[in-house]
Length: 350
Image (cartoon, rainbow, N blue to C red; front, side, top):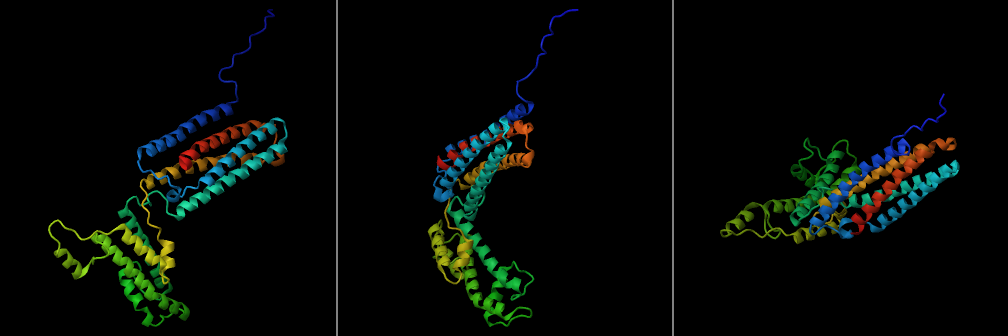
């Protein structure tokens, strides 16, 4: 019988747990994923002269972004300490640090939601941003039309004005203008009808202001000249070959909106429904890239929060079998932190 020791069996692969190897492979795909976003942003940013960088225009909050960067860095530190506590079998301490990480993640998303609200409230959204003066004028007209329709909806919804075509504001305005001399229909309270009677002249006037603007936009004519009717046709007949009526200017519409917003009769409605006119060149591309990159990053933050919540739900039952899970979750969280460290200077500072 041979007493020669058998050679140790060879083990293929990298000497790390399969879960950790799988996570590194996954993070490799994630790196490519965000590299595509960041690379696209850099190409668009460098190739677009006049890219919006003024925080007053983009409503980028550098301070909020800086606070969020600090929050994520601290949360990454807490994950490291939590994993160290797991290795030392100090599971209660590990739970405390993981809970702190989860709270900081909620704080990050809370600050990000405040930033999102700031942009949404100023209509800094993909496809909503006017990039030229003419686009800004048409956008203001559409927003003013929505204000008028919302005002008219109060009359139809309450029953003060009866119609089978509530969206036909051209015919509705006739009934609304006649409301002060009308009597309350059956089913409409006297107080409601009286309030609508008092507001009817102002709403009819607001409609006429919007319609006048709309007609001048269609006619591509300045507010200083008529845009419809015999006077408009007469003005066109006086033009020589190649001449045009004075064009509608951005400053004219801006002054009109300022006048409407300061009017005590309907200024509050106009101010809340019509955004300030401000063309933003490349604004839609900027908004698309901003929400795309920060949105996907926020999704990854939520995934990390779910991983930490899975560990925390163990409560006092947490033991050493969760050590690798905590380590892998920490690696994922460090990646999320690293991505934000790239996004912050790109979107907020440069």
